[in-house]
Length: 434
Image 1: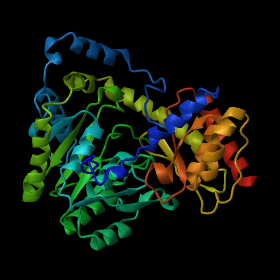
Image 2 (image 1 turned 30 degrees about the vertical axis):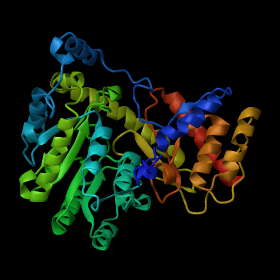
Image 3 (image 1 turned 135 degrees about the vertical axis):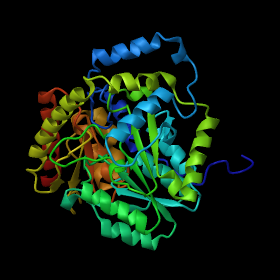
Image 4 (image 1 turned 90 degrees about the horizontal axis):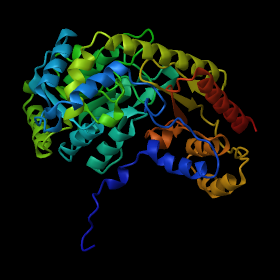
């Protein structure tokens, strides 16, 4: 080309959660059945959307107005319902004008970082959800700045490190939390959230809280959305229906602005987000239209509670098996439908490949495994080639300093889920102890 047309941060756009699919699909054609543990799609894992939710969608499809544009901020009735629901929970109070709809939170994440001043950074967790970490690093054309979630301490965030990095990097203007967390399943305790709010207040920062799994929590840790503890600190909350209904194909999420009027720069930034959305005209109308009816139905929250009980049961099965292997660090999740498993230092070093029975697959992976330098990705390739189980490595897949992998808790067939976990454990033992 006459000029370099590539954005300088484009090389930071990586999403190994889906990239590994291309490899898995190739060996699937070689005759290896794949167990897809790489992506959090409840529908793909045969979770059934209740008929009563489907009926609300059918009814909405029958209405002519759902085929038209929605307002740029989103349907008023949806924003009114969300604001009402938010306000009765306590904490910061918002209005429908504080809510902005997007075509999924991926769209919202992209716009949040795209509208930041190019010299502004947002510090986020390690491990990191790649849509956030890639978009932030690409925006800055620089490595992602992280604070550690400590697997040796139940995935608790290292707030001392967070503050040290905020001091070290004066360009940091925001703190990202993902609560419940993906990939770890960690849920922030209320006291920890309050300490993060105090850090933001102390250093004049804003907070972004990705709460896409906010209604999918379980365990003995009290869950509170950021709005409940934010007080007077500027912030953005992020929610959606992809995981809850579940309807990931709807691509319907929204952000909530807190304390826009407390800071002039933050107010201007949120207005830039609104203006950017107006340039896109609007988000998809149909899924917005059913939010008040579905979430307002008395069956909705009991339905979510039932799902959470099932996720907790599978988490307990996985925890019971993985925790028996001394070389692993495993923590019981308390939210979302993921579990992150970490290898202790040195556990993956200088290991021979696992036995791959399929000759075509063995030949296909020979160079891939031999050349792979990232140790946990090398293990996940071995696991995929030898068993057909597709998981995501932590270091390369989640911008992490830890070697490990993430699995989902979505397989509804308990015997099949248990079998998958047992196969992974057997592969770990064969890999480490061979």
